[in-house]
Image 1: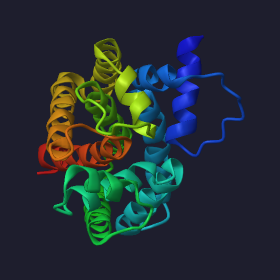
Image 2: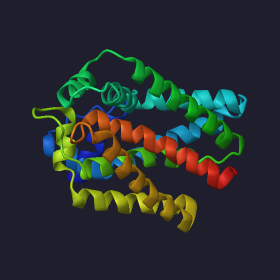
Image 3: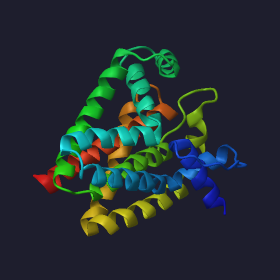
Image 4: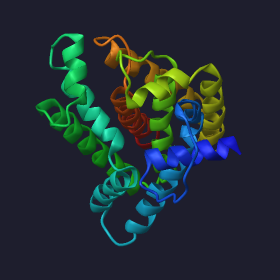
Amino acid sequence: MILLKRFLLLLQFMTTIPIPVNLDVGDEDFGKGLALAPLVGLLIGGVVACAGYFLNMFFAPAITAVLVVITYILLTGGIHLDGLGDTFDGIFSNRPKEKILEIMRDSRVGTYAVLVTVCILGLNVVLMYSIISAHIYFTLVLMPVSGRIGSVAGATVSKYARSGPGLGKSFIDYCGLKELVLAVIISIITFFAFRGFAGVFLCIFMFLSAVLLVKFLSRKIGGATGDVLGAVCELNQTIFLIISYLLVLR
């Protein structure tokens, strides 16, 4: 029952899917619930893949790719893209740690946020165009799983960068090795179901990719925040699309 509660909690937090349930949760549920993040990614991926399949019946692959990216943004509310932009605004400001954290918390959008968001979305569209043209829809299913792998792996290996409270503190403080192991098991089963043994190796690589990304993004602030975890999610997805393109379509 507690797993279902935490899964619904993540659905409410990570998606715009209406879940009309009042959940009695605490900070611990957010962090420990991250173990189920790959399942949320699988649900998102299923919707995205179905959208790609049906839209491709009526539109050219290039148009379909744009519409699929829009579908993903609407489904997630752009929550991780917001974290991506805030993170890059902060870490590329070349300011001291406290100023970087202040910039990341600022609701205003800076130059680096715009640039990285445009680059990531543009790259995703081009890669999805190739994937949709080849009718390799399982890649669209696994893409959000790879992103949520980034969130759980990043939270597990990080400490919270801020001295005070923050949205990411619950995720980072309460997501430990036990949650990581469960997320790994769920992810490996998912990748194996769609890609066989090759998928297992790809899944492991996505966990390693997430760890390297969070270490890179957190080096200037001595830890991670919710924004950093969101950035790792989006970047890990794009890396997955690039690898899938190289392995399958080249």
